[in-house]
Length: 229
Image (cartoon, rainbow, N blue to C red; front, side, top):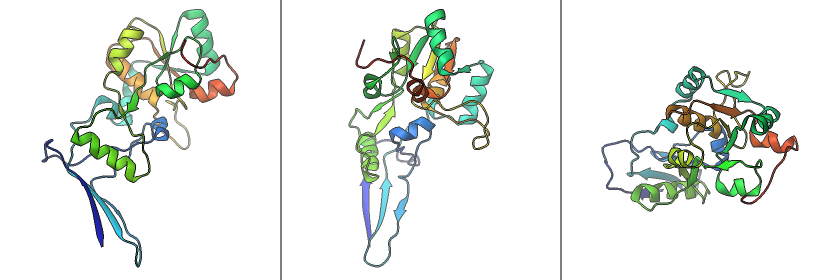
């Protein structure tokens, strides 16, 4: 027995389904799941097989969805530096760097560096188009009931809150890395590195990246505040 859960859409049906499903932990690595086109879980005996098919389609990929090797190459060309948390604090205090916290607003309100500016790079899914309903269904199938999507207003919000002339240190939860390691020979993508890529792609020239992320900041006992300043 096969149970079908389908989400249809008036969006171009000639395109292959490329629904994305991600959890908050996904975004620390910058990776996304793409399970919907043909997900089949086979169980033995009396347990049914489940297949999810999706007719709702997503437009061409955005810059944030570009391959990591492309992002990493541009970040290197634009000389985006990684700094540790103590260096970030010094730059903030002595050189007027802005710490741009790209985590979800709820995480920012729990705790963040003093004077940090929050512009979330991913947000909760807001709309109710056929495409959004399909993505919600996919999230729910995997037990995730607070699905997120790329924030389409990310650059505009940074422009308004910070400005292109600002010196920026981009921070997320775990930071990722541009440095090759044994496990990650090409470095490791993260929300902050995706954000840094979008910033330099849109004309920002003074962009740094927080190595170790805000996890390292809090672990080191550096200054932190909660709520909104």
